[in-house]
Image (tube, rainbow, N blue to C red; front, side, top):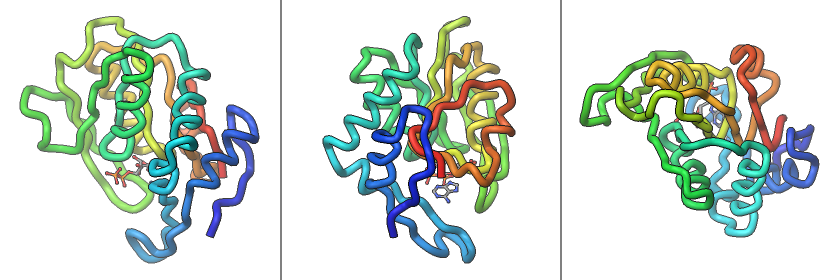
Length: 183
Ligand SMILES: O=P(O)(O)OC[C@H]1O[C@H](OP(=O)(O)OP(=O)(O)O)[C@H](O)[C@@H]1O
Ligand SMILES: Nc1ncnc2[nH]cnc12
């Protein structure tokens, strides 16, 4: 099933690129969840490049990119490479080897804890935070809090897809949210 196009912060063409690379998977990872699988987008070179370039075009300037485990890593690495910015991983609990800040949160289908190294940022560094999907905003809120705790200044938050009906954007308050596709 193809995702219905509603709108996007970077216009209808980029919204269509993301929609075209998304497959809806029913009842994954739990009954009642419609999982937006973006793996086809990641696997389509021209579409992936357009999506990454669309985020970069919207978001400069920033000094470093923070990617949320796991699918956010793919986007952060591409942006970090293309722009020459560094990449900081925001990891699931227990994966980072050195002292880290932790934040627990609820997401659409469960609960989790994210961590970031305490020395991940130079104070005042502008940090672009990226992930693949914004749903309830639990993950994004935790990631943004961690970046700020570690001394970064969140310059923006970008996702490929926003599930608008879950109101994640509202939950993030005044933070600047950018979604290539909102469904
Ligand atoms: O807005 P929320 O309700 O918090 O949901 C969004 C998060 O859910 C997914 O990650 P998931 O925790 O499934 O991890 P994964 O990327 O490791 O599969 C997605 O990649 C976002 O990080
Ligand atoms: N429905 C969904 N599809 C993909 N990723 C998600 N993260 C939270 N909810 C999601």
